[in-house]
Amino acid sequence: MKEFLCSTLELMILLPGMLLAFLPMKQHLRMHLTKLMALAVPLTLFLCLAGGAVSCFFSIRLIWLFFPVILIAGVFYVHTLKISRWKSISVFLAVCAAFSCLGGAAVAINGILSSEDPALPFLPGVSLSWFLMCCVFTLAAWHPATHAARRLLEEEAFAQTWYVFWILPLMFIGLNLIMVPKNPDILDWGRLRSIYILISLSLLALLLLFYALFYLMASSLSRNDRLRRENQFLSMQQARYDNLRTAIEETRKARHDMRHHFNTMQSLAARKEWESLKEYLSDAQGSFPDIELGLCSNTAVDSVAGHYGMLYRKQDIPFSFELDLPCKLPVPEIDLCLVLSNLLENALEASIKTAPARRQIKVRARLHSDHMALLSVENTFDGDIREKEGIFLSSKRRGEGVGLQSVRHIAEKNGGYSRFLYGNGVFCANVILRSSK
Image 1: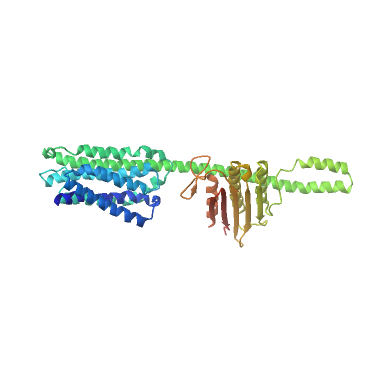
Image 2: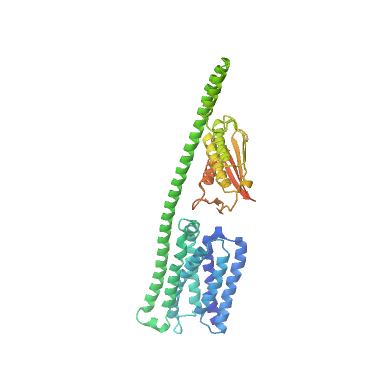
């Protein structure tokens, strides 16, 4: 009975171990937290009791039972997470490495209290002490696990690092296993027992130092990648803004020149100089930009819609515009134009990759009350849309899509809203812009 109790208590470190491993994974669970606990706690207790019984009745040293028990717990852990296997395995091994360092200290403490076999199994008091040390370590690591480790798991700037990160905890686990003395009496020589405890705790400190350095390195890489993406985003938005200004100015110039053209044509018609009028019409036709006008009462929005309407026509993409917007908008004009141009640009890129028979773009815009504008762009698409946790990934580069990221940022700037839906080969973007006043 004593051996069964000792073995079971030693395996009970699985409870704080599983808790610590799940702390950074709140956003990556495949099931509800309550259901997970209902499965994880009974499974862990069963593994502890079963391992203790096997060790007791078959006289198997518990150190050999740790491997299958931890393997079963690890398989359960990995399959309850919707995250990369490399990340989940690395986190699980990191917890095992930390607890194995504490186990090395427990081996030496057991030798002080027992003159029989200080390796394993432990005395009940030592087994309980190891369990309590693991619980204290879990509490101490609670904040880093739920903040720093969680941020590391969510960052994509250094995703490939996780492919080799599992080697570090595996090395520490191997070192602690190698350090377990085959002949426990050797620890009684001189100060070997004190040195053994010091080495075990030093390995734990070194492991934590490696993790801290990895976090600092990852944070620096993440910050640099975020700055790079923000600079790329700003440069692309600046280029799009410049194109918008050019299109709007061209339209305004065309409207201004059109009045002069009408005056000249009216004068020629009044003098009945029909041949001169025909020549003038032929010359003037080439001076107008190929932009459809009259889609909207607002000049800026009309220019943007006309510019993309021209591009759609060149690509043989069927489209329709329903733009019921007045000359004076309650929302910032440039914000609406930027959102519209981003959505129309994305619709153009998606339609080019779509089978010609399925191409279709529908654009609707109207006011809702005196301080809100509603915009909807719907287009067909072929292929897959990559989305991760509500963030749409670019099809042209690694990372988030710049266009939709810009739309979301502009919409939420003044308390607006954006929603993107897709299914059955149709992508729909709905945006609400609010007045800044």
